[in-house]
Image (cartoon, rainbow, N blue to C red; front, side, top):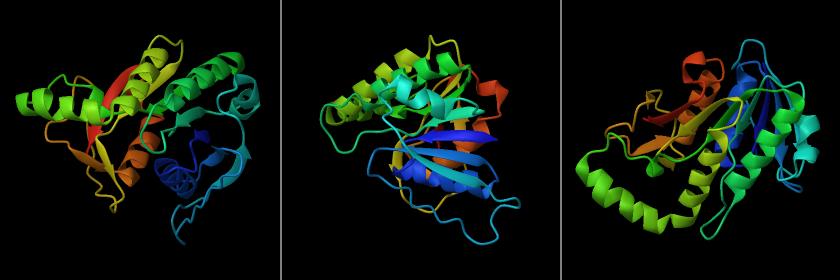
Length: 217
């Protein structure tokens, strides 16, 4: 498949690019000006081998990314804030992608959000103690994620919103739980590698089109 990855220089984005190449996909990695993608695909991984093109583009400008999106099979966004403080990177970047996809006719969109903004199915302690604390500590980034979801949900696209919990850089566990009706009980953390694995699996999964999916290890 032809996949374009936004936020490709970030930690989820880098892992997403690496796994997509290993699976034999053609990947266009979009990065900020001056950023690079450091991807190493282990020898022997991937029977076919993928192809990588790295593009510097202003993601907030639909006109700048329309040509990058055109002809792709799917758009995957691993955008996220760097550090704490006020941010609109996810919402503004996604707004630009949605507009550019409308211009080019590309329909499949997957974005990474946050499990912390969803509470359906949570146990009382998580819902009334843990997540309110997270809501205060991570107020700015979670507000950005909510706004992003509000932009994606009404879009006339084949979208999937993927919501992992606290992210770690540990080795992949290979056990991914998911829920389209609420949160994942006891799902307090997830490796970035497993998030990337889920995203790639979800690209061709019609059952999660126009669904919000909470995932966890």
